[in-house]
Amino acid sequence: MSRKQQLLKRHRRNKRIGLLIALMLLIAIGVLVAWWLPLVLAVLGWIAHEAWFADHLFYSPQDDYQYSFPPYTPQPKIHLDGERLRLDEGVMLVDDATLILALRVKSTWLGRFIDPVVELLGGDNPDRQTFERGVNGLRYLNLSGQANVLSQGELRLRGRFCRLLGEPVLWAFEQPDYRRQRVMVIAPHADDAELAAYGLYSQADEAWIVTLTAGEIEAEHYQQMGLNTVEAARLKGRLRAWDSIAVPRWAGVPEAHCVQLGYFCLQLAAMQAAPATPVGSREADLGDTRLFRQLNPFALPGDVDGAPTWNNLLADLRELLLRARPQVIVLPHPSLDPHPDHICAQAAVLEALSGLEWQPTTVLGYANHLHDNDRWPMGDAGHGIALPPTFDSTTPMQPCCLRMPLARQRDKAMALGMMHDLQPPMPFKRRLRRLIQWLLASRVPPVYGENEFFRKAVRQHELFWVLKHGETSVRQK
Image 1: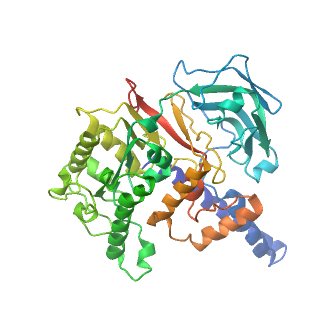
Image 2: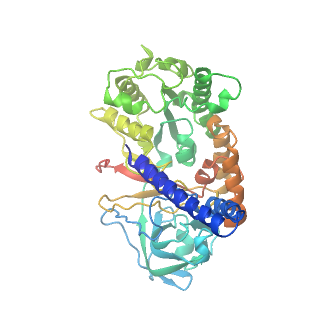
Image 3: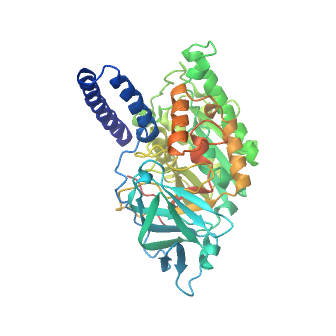
């Protein structure tokens, strides 16, 4: 069982215990006070739960985030005077550096009911970065894109429903402009490349998008059209295969650089466990990947027999790596992103690279999911991305941030809107929860679409992690 599953299991157990205690209290109130009072209290309690307690947050908001960064990372001296951030005299910052500021954030009493926000004010790129309700600990703000206004001494930090405490610490990470290199984005499913790296690949001198699975399962939306489980799964897989090839064209990626490998969703771990054994689809009644590979611009080793095996996946990846010769590979982060297909996608690429004659200069990691905070990145669409929660400082981590101007954010939102898996309307319960949170907790729904990824992914930043650069090795957990 994965850590994510363990956390969910514990959360659901605790919720069942809480509901049982609440039910016993309501029965006692009904017997001792008035029969109708438990009904009123139950409705009010449910509304309060949906507004303020429905988030999947598997740690205390009072826990300090624990990061360590590579040794010798520049740490320009900085001070917080009131609201103004002030660098020591003579300190110069590179304009496109990734700037991370650590400081303590403590919510006010209102910050237990409305998301605490730190506003970045004073320049042409104002920003808002959001933290957990009830936060009281060390957090890491993302000041990327604010170098000029910070150097001029004009950047101000203002807490809304929170206070900023202690002496801040600044790290400045300088990286090459990866947009000027050949980039290959590894997407476990159609839409992962867009969610994580649309801004990067849409600006790269040369970009390749490689999608590993058809993402055919959980096709209930298509069953509502009268299709049975198998028909719905096959239709969904064909649509997402089309998306993986067609949507990158919106960003200018040539069709010849978009490849769908057609392996089956949530089956990569089983393939990895028995590399020569075919592992068919859970729902599409298929044991041949070629149905979902028909749009590829060229043949791959796995097309010979269509067998969904780990060995075929490795052969396909090696062929693509040698054909594209990417300088930068972008793939799921090995420890931040808990989705089983994402973990296996990263492992497959590393195994394919082992002993290969071509090696990338840089490997960047991304996280479209987290173990312990389903709402991250917190806050609204169009805001910045603060660093995610992490509580293991034993492994140094190196963030790399790409700024996303508003026009590119909109293009990214349109790319996500073309993805069929993000188009179905939310269930009624989620719509009602979103309305309650809008009215009571000031959470604004995303303007680009209903799906939660329109809020999470359309931001002022795209955040990556440098897993390999030069002689630095990819670290796995």
